[in-house]
Length: 124
Image (cartoon, rainbow, N blue to C red; front, side, top):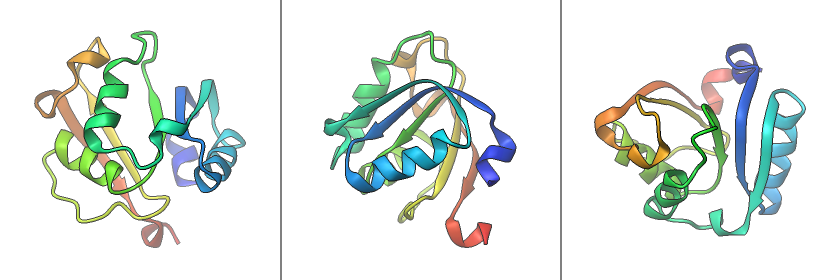
């Protein structure tokens, strides 16, 4: 509900195809409109570097993206592209990051801004 109150439409949902992330994605699909949804086996146990490589190949047509994946990859990705040092992004934790770029391949910590970080216990 918190995310739905902030965002109505996301251009691209890139989700791991693992059972738990698939179920999580279905919940979000019922709450938020997505332009394209893709399930990807390679997001399972992906490193931050692997996820960053995937992001760098996203279409420039996507202005907004949601990634549903796994740790430690997501936590390390957040730490690599923001100025925070997060120990662990908990299950269903939300990190909203804004990138001042026109092309996903230009993504780096130099053009990233952490907008919001919420943990499930903060939303009860």
